[in-house]
Length: 93
Ligand SMILES: [Zn+2]
Ligand SMILES: [Zn+2]
Image 1 (tube, rainbow, N blue to C red):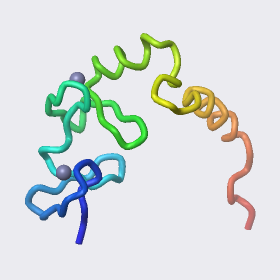
Image 2: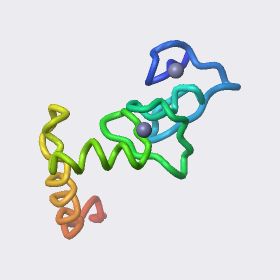
Image 3: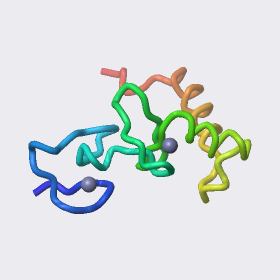
């Protein structure tokens, strides 16, 4: 049985959706801050939590970093990841 990543209760097919590989109820796909319903075209996510675009920007950009949420700077990791694309990745035969 599948569980909703947000509320940790079972998800039935009729109310199931997948966002960022997380299974959610339609109702649970909302901004963590204002509870506004999100659409798959218009949301931001960080560490399995979802935010509307404006609150994501408000919450994360205002601080100038991501440490306010108890995580190391995500931005840095993205940069490293982009650099890593130079390296051959499972291309050898
Ligand atoms: Zn749920
Ligand atoms: Zn919001």
